Length: 234
Image 1 (cartoon, one colour):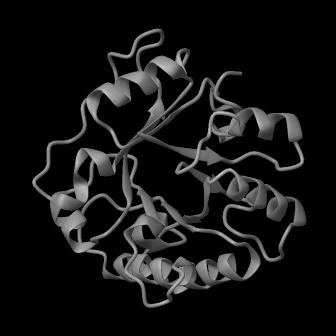
Image 2 (cartoon, one colour):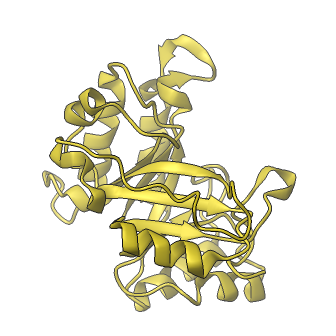
Image 3 (cartoon, helix red, strand yellow):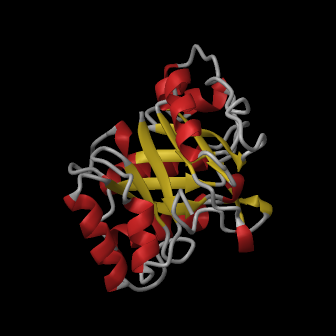
């Protein structure tokens, strides 16, 4: 099992950054989020952090919100109208390896989002025409429908849980991966994210036992709306 770590940490906080990344190993993915996306200009400190991750064999994925398939809360305007420009800017400003698409829809038909997944793969693959499946992770925060998964093939990982730890002191709230006949939603492609977790190591071990391909747990209580801005053992 590998870690999918949302590193929504101010990069100038060296101690916090080093503590949060200490557990990451080669093959893990760190989600980079300078300004709820790439921002307008490259920050050299972020560039240095990405370089440090790459030296250790950790992949850096750029954060991109999809607003659940719509633009700025307007259900009549698809996300693709603005996310494509942001994704292109990501690759112009930083040497990212892929994208973490947050606020992903979990059901319905979303051809605009499917097009963004294709764009993300092409922007971050060594060959721009590549269909590399290891370049995109998505976060609906809940189980997606198999119909949606089928319409968006070759996603590396689906976050099927992102929430506060529901049973403090226990790993009983870590439920098994979703049974699925869809090859894009095997247990190896499912991720469990947990914050406010008093026992991150136990949660991680439980995810391994249940067969998840990806997980990340932190004690961060999610104060000020960001549950991913401190190290897993604070």
